[in-house]
Image (cartoon, rainbow, N blue to C red; front, side, top):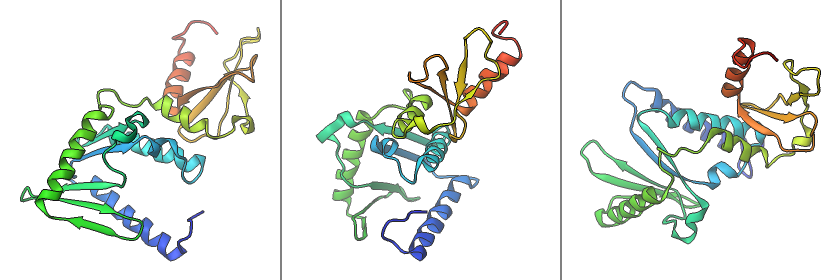
Length: 215
């Protein structure tokens, strides 16, 4: 797997650290997390198509948990986005707040109340300007955005077993983790609709159960 300029040992160390941190979310009393993510986190493919699908799917599963809120800071914020580097605000058990940020070379922990208070004000503004949890980013749109970064012309299209013999045919492309591209076989150069695997499974079950009439 590509790892940039770091060594294999460094990559293994970082993966182990992140895996241990992820396990904190599964403990009996998990932390309360409120994250405002830049839209570029969804739009920039990292690790290839399959890795990106898994990342997006995992993020969406986390976002529905009661202790986790995920907001997206849209590109439209432009120069009004308050932070240029990742910032973490951590509330400790004694209710004091510390801040953490990282540069290219090192991490920095900020304890000074005046500086942390300024970060809190900026973060409050970022939360207000970001898309709310009541308006979540659609799963289908997320997958469609990711697929547009890759060439669907290389996909292997299969005719649906529920297509009829009168020319009303749909084709699906397997091999996209977390998503099912669907297109009209009569218009193979036309757009493909992107469904999550869960939504497509519900649709197929409905067809098999006769919920959509005779096919």
